[in-house]
Image: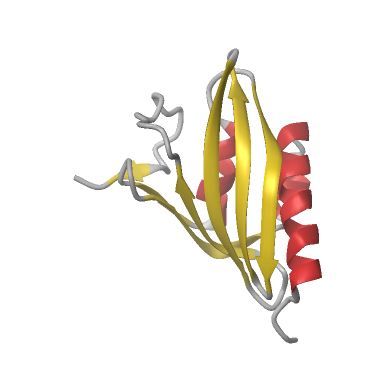
Length: 130
């Protein structure tokens, strides 16, 4: 199976955000490769494995939703800018995504342009480098 084209990558990312917003975790999990790597360089947070990435979303504190503002896809890679709405606030997030040949996410790198300290986490699967 060959790597996804830009149109397929767009479909996967649109589904990713729609399922996350709908809290449809079983279907969301199907988009994630077992070896997925997640990282937030500015906060030094990281998670290893699709199960950990899912848990990050499932346990995110507050009433939240992500609104896709821009989505640029090139083959199996994408850059997505979102407005992240949580508890009456809006934060801009920029994510870099990579898909494998099975159309599953293998890498996600998140950037938050504004100064950002992560909220207390309800999962030990998201760790922080010293």
